[in-house]
Length: 186
Image (cartoon, rainbow, N blue to C red; front, side, top):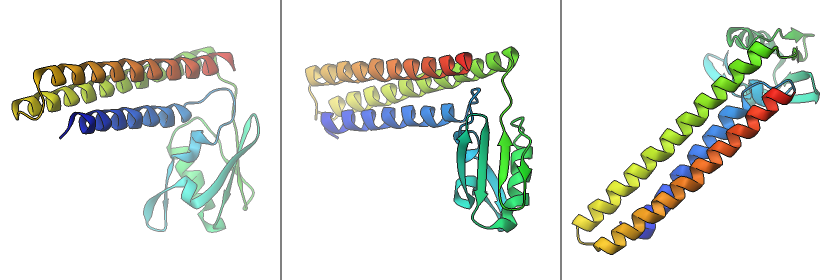
């Protein structure tokens, strides 16, 4: 594996880690309705666990309401059951064609819990990025032992990997801080 291949692999994996963090943060409640709050729910329908977004359109027509329009009206009860079982604190209301979820205002205690969850997710992201750095450094040392990289090339590669690590850790921190502000401000 060349130095460029190692660097490319490290960068791709770090990018995926940040994307996973962003998806996880989208599922955390703020005071505003956001389809991401229920998008990732899995519904027991047609004999298997199916992601909600494959069963219905999910939208937020108002700042305090999420509307779910199932493609197949027979799945409404299954979707309602999944929302209740997910224990998100929502009470879905159905009229037979669509489901409305009113998003209650967040209390101070709930906001603090959400911020704590955001911090946990950010820490997981940073740990993941550091593990990717470790893997990249191991690959660099392995290539040096195999005589495909010189010591100087290995050291340069490790410096570049460290630079990427700092860049992506900073991205994780700023992304999580922005989400914390959204939770606290709404």
